[in-house]
Image 1 (spheres, rainbow, N blue to C red):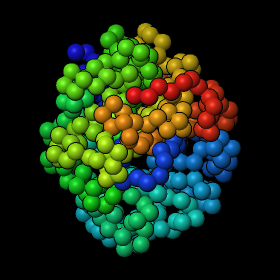
Image 2 (tube, rainbow, N blue to C red; image 1 turned 60 degrees about the vertical axis):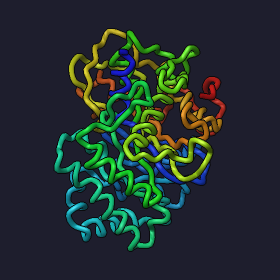
Image 3 (cartoon, helix red, strand yellow; image 1 turned 30 degrees about the vertical axis):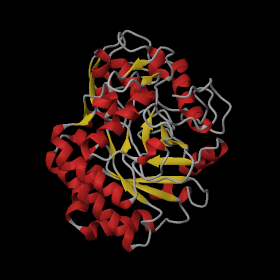
Image 4 (cartoon, rainbow, N blue to C red; image 1 turned 45 degrees about the horizontal axis):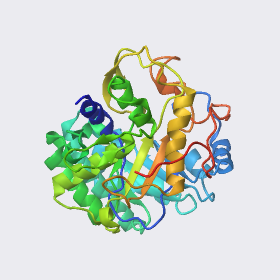
Length: 389
């Protein structure tokens, strides 16, 4: 069915936690800075605090930003850029130096709790680099062990949803053949061994853009009363986000043969981290190939319909925020699962994409002048009801 195609595109981009998590689910923001008009980091940190935002994901390890975040209690994920992944894989000393300069020098004053090794590396279409990804993760983890930080700071890598195939129905989901055995299986083993998580970037926005005729808008925005049934399991999905998450869980299990205890309420794995998910409030998806925010998957989409609106962005992002804050984070397949998620993005970024009308510039919760694009509340209280999967 047409829904299957659209799920393939989206599922590959979402972050997820594979393993133990003793804390309640939290929602944070992805702090991108591809712009020339953003406020300085100290003002941004004050903005985060004023709005009750307690987690932030960075796309680098910028010293000014990390220093501004010191002594705030805000949890921070830093990122090793894609161009440094190969060096970290080939040279443990390089990984150690990177961890010292970008993590150890700031922790614990800056509450770094995760290191992302690259961002959607598979999208670079470099098989040699793909094969080095787990090596880089292993060496950075070993560096954190040497520095005495590995218990508090976990290593992962965000993957795009293009890493999956057969994602609808969710129970048929698999990792793509070219990465399943060579990359994903050793990666999942590493994550389980180190108590870490798999990161995935889910974008119902782009899935709907690719196939608006067959995907109900309310299903993409968070709740469709009728829903869609997985004929293999009988599970009904009222939200695309749930279908994407479960497709990821099934892909992991279909690859490793492990059925995580999280499904039945255990704590031996199965939590999810979504490193970025969001909805644009303006702009156009132009004909031809477009990339997801910050290096996501390529897709073909046509314009001519109102998708990127303030109302839709407010509906989706408030649905995500309120769902986490309400504690209703489970999915049809994993009703007891936790869900940490990062809203993309903190700001509208005027240097992204292909010009001022490009949709990629309008994913922000805030304008560069720090005014809200629409109402939301990270402390709870904004938006509509949250339905339990």
